[in-house]
Image (cartoon, rainbow, N blue to C red; front, top):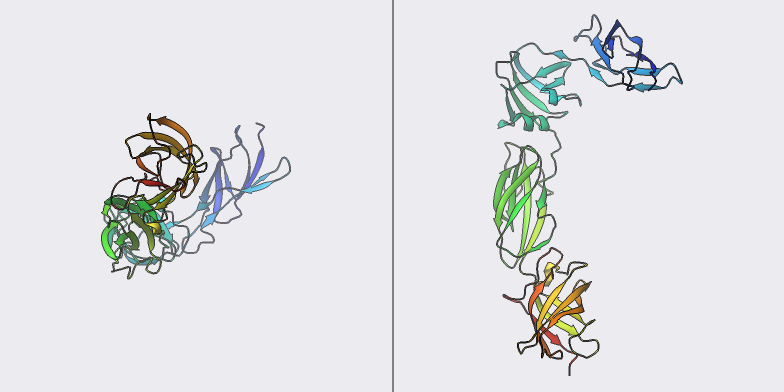
Length: 384
């Protein structure tokens, strides 16, 4: 790559350029240098002589780079910040007045001073001890922080957010991932996401079933939560900032907008199955099966595009296995006979489904052919 001649200027009386691509240059606000063979230009900026934290003219600089050997295009380099480190011990009540909080480097900047913390320090939100990571994620512009500040690294500073104006991440159910969800079982792993360090309280049908703390990555889980059988289990989740608590969402971050999800507990089953015998030839290819599902309010429907097999018994001990395909939310069609017992009665007025494979609903629940409220009899209303 051909080297480009570059002109760099800080446009600031509070900073100077001291180096370009590792080569020292005479301090000043403007200089000319060359990009390296890869087209890179590394600029080192320093505070100008006489820069004072008490009367700063700027707190940061962003150099302008101009290509002077061609069409003189310009672009902005990275920002360099100038912070005066607070070197006086004492209690401080800080109001975070800047969007630029460089927490990844273990300090915050407010009121023209940089305040550093280290591994010896203790961190609180509303007086509740939290990890440094949780504290950093909670800190934002507008917060008020009470600091017992120690300038020596081997001493313990304490940091306590007394007013947290951070907009908390929304509390969300991730498991179950859909709502409402149909499910047949006695318990379910309930989990989700929310603001790190917050407390999440979960209610099932208005009864508290668990409380947990959101981890540093924003995840929370209650593990296996018992389900009420054959009813809709309606879950509601509230989140509370550290030090806050309440009943039924009182005082929660999302008091008026709780996270909700529903698990409709009960089998995916039918109460009636009708055979549409299109040619009046008894059970045959192209016939359709129409299902009326158990618990109609649950919204059961066949998974779109499913294919599987159904085993029919003719009532006299003879079986036929057929392959079926999806037609619509409650209808399947016979597309092939996989196997048939000798003597099977194709024209029986009543068949019994004894086995299914791959017949599932929208939540991948397998069709149940036994149990309370289940009807696996197939009525052939076309046979006179």
